[in-house]
Length: 77
Image (cartoon, rainbow, N blue to C red; front, top):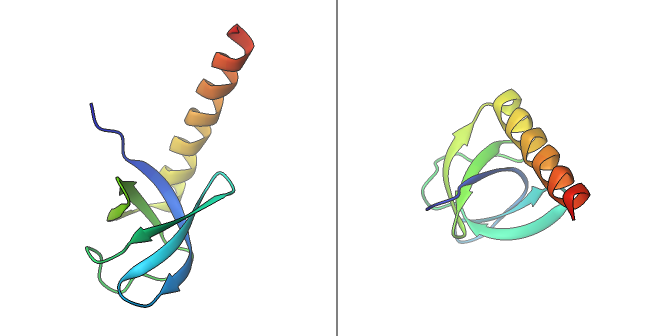
């Protein structure tokens, strides 16, 4: 099973790299597959690569569902 998650671009780096934020956690990723990436864009990332841009509203809905799932898992323990 593959899991690709939305993340917000917080910084553009040289050599087709970028920094994204996932629920406040920063990660350096490859942005080589996306042209004209900008700070503030939301992207789907998988194994360290930005695969495509995603609508900001859709990204936020997905991240919220992931938070709710995590909170439910923590409450069940």
